[in-house]
Length: 334
Image 1 (cartoon, rainbow, N blue to C red):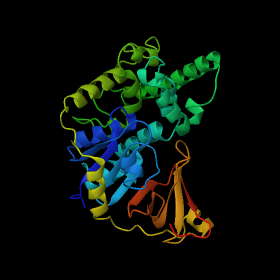
Image 2 (cartoon, rainbow, N blue to C red):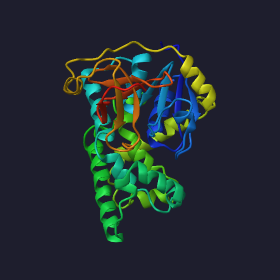
Image 3 (cartoon, one colour):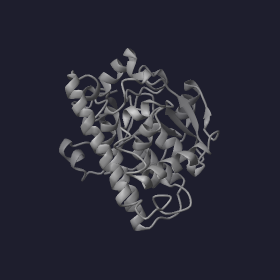
Image 4 (tube, rainbow, N blue to C red):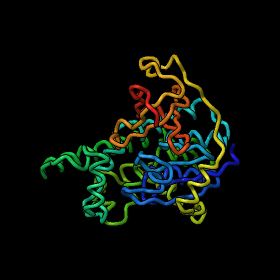
């Protein structure tokens, strides 16, 4: 199935999208890209594919659409297996992914985005993000509260930088797994701190206080981020071909579908709701964008992912962690 086209839906300044673009370019995996606006509406997804899910990026492979970068990176490793890793290397990669995607680290980084950024002055962007992440963008706070929150956020980012400095990078290695080039482990570990450090001047200094995070305090980590940035910049021009939403939708709706994972009847969520294959379910993220729910017929579910087919016939995949699967009462038709 690796011969099926890969279509990446994203907008260029999404830090989550960069995770995928970096990995695709590092691995030399061919793909197309369907560029999206940073705020709703996104008719390429909502109209052409009947998808309510509002987070970016998404990746289509044939007739299947994958949500969430964690699941997408696993898919890429399945379709295009990387060189074998030792158990220790797998552990490091997984733990770095957990640190940057399954904790509050990204949300703390978002709190450090300076108000001087043009996008942070755009009322349309702020209104859009208030519906996406009310705790970060919609909760009224005093100037003092915001200052304290930013200080605490900076402390958490500093803690993650110190962790890298004192453990994985402490022996002076160039890359996380010690090879000659970056791997998925580097992508998993670098993307949050890279996002803040590479904001255009002077916004980067406004995001990360240079008195707190600098080359003197954390020389190995800062050198690693810079080395990664140079490596990625050298791959400029290897981005995927840009296609329009109509062409992307046509490829997906005509594409071949992957194998059926089946419904694990022992799964606790399946068991407590009595879910069966073909039942109508609602699936949505539990942290951000939870108001945007998708409905379809359950195709498969196991401990790693849930798969449903929506009214357009698109087979959608989401990870189990961070997503809720609810059976629709009465199991109505779509």
